[in-house]
Length: 448
Image: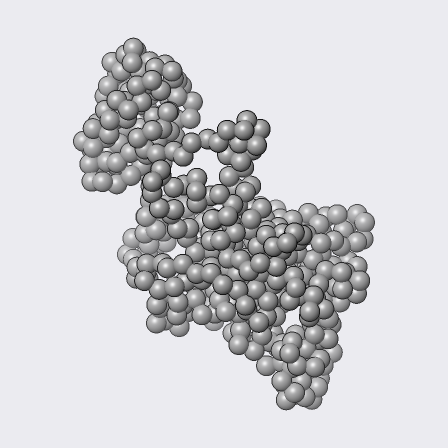
């Protein structure tokens, strides 16, 4: 068990955040099943001329860990030119591979959120460091960050300062808890603000049980996608007004929106919806069940009366369709414990694959509860565009695709993440610095 930190969306350059959780590690690299499905279904390959809907958009990212870089990574997938600013010791997410116990020359979590970017190292503690960032930002379309607001203000990279210098810039920020309030500068990871404080963990905790752990970056990736969408909307507004604006989302807000079905119900009715468990689901048609081998699947018959006859036929119990105890929604709810027990017994007689054939024959709505290996070998995931080929020195690396496709203006990743400071000279040259000026900046420790 190794401590793995999720995104600290409030951490400044001094990285004074806190919070961690332990994550068990299972070593899996690539299996024959993955290879078979990869050979069967071709994944999208980056091609010349495929640039995406945000081609020509200039983005500067000052992000750490996952949430901010995820937003920048999505914009890069959509075609934007994203320049990632890092301190001399790099984005701490470059250490994910070691945290996960990996002894390999690549870093899958970091690659996911930082591909297709260009990288520059600027030391803000050195005279001229912030001024160099200003040069980049004065002509940028978008700024993306998840650094704490108080740290941004100390650096002079706060929204008011940057928008005064460049009124067209769209300033996108992810915080832990919001732009206002007494806790706006509280350090946050998604497991704290998104998962715990928002109420998600509580709603997934069985009565008397321990709260479950979220997966790495779970809230961060959702918040990153939300910010990317918000930035895109602000760019549409700028095309009409000529003015940029501040765009913000927080992990707390995103967590609350994730469970807004529950929260808005409690807000309007004054009563919370109970925590669901297998034994107490009032509609057994939308419940999880185990097969003969102990593998889980989910029935997803939200409209119980509509789906009940199909389920009865699929499990070879047609006499239950009109059985008085089970024939209606109310009857099934009144006899829910008995019915779930009977269904458990029945589903334990066959494998999930065998039930799948029967379900599909009778048009029963269902889904398997898949492991990571099963997901990576799922032919529908491959056919549905869930994987993408990322160019890598004349070959390519298969990675998870970002979850939006543009049919008219398709985009694709252009490269693996930059090495630390890989494009410093290139970016400075584009700003008008010659080799001698770049050498002086490097000698003064401003860039690396």
